[in-house]
Structure formats: C-alpha cells, structure tokens
Image (cartoon, rainbow, N blue to C red; front, side, top):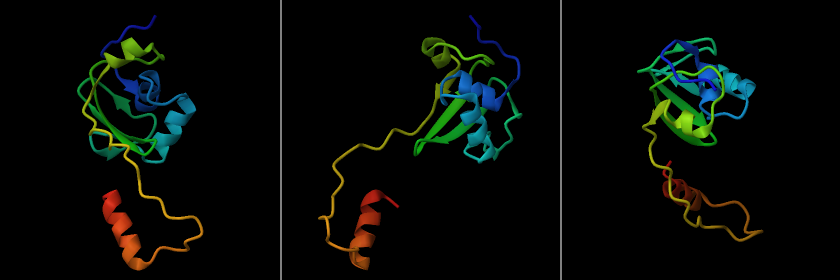
Length: 122
C-alpha cells in the first residue's frame, strides 16, 4: 500500500490518486482544459504539487477547493485519500424542485427567461 508523503507529485496524478477523477487520462484532460488550478493559476498536467498547495477543480458542474496535506502518486483507498487533502469546497447547492415549463409551451419570453436566470443564481 502506498503511504502519503511530502514529495512533489504531478497534479494530474495527485487528483487521480485522491479519487477526484476516475482515470488518470480524465484527470490529465481536465488539467489541460484549464479545469484544475494550483494556487489560483491554470497549470499543465506535469505541474508539481506539494503539501500546502491549494488545488481548485471544476468537475461535474461543481467546484472543489482542496488543500494538499500529503502527496500520493499511486491511487489509494478512499479512507487514505481523505487524509491527503482538506476540503474547503463551498457547500453543494440544494437540489430543490426546479420549476418546469409545460411541454409544448414554446420558447420562454424575455421576462420568463430573466426570471429563470435569477432563480438559478446567474
């Protein structure tokens, strides 16, 4: 079993190892697309992370703000992975019932669209 340590590790390998992404290639793709930032800066997959860095990830329409506490280069079990970061993510928005337009009602008017955008918080 791989134990957490303090050596520098590639950011794509770290976010995969702590189970944010299912595959390493998915993690690398997200980093290349700019969905992963280290200390507020978009980086390349080979960027090294060390304990104390803040990693901000946009994944599945949610923002994860993780502080690196320990680095691992191999994928670890969920209990070990949770010890490798401190989660500072904003709370997930409540999954309330969104208003639904009647089927066949046509396009929303400008007023309705503005109301929908306001309701969604945009």
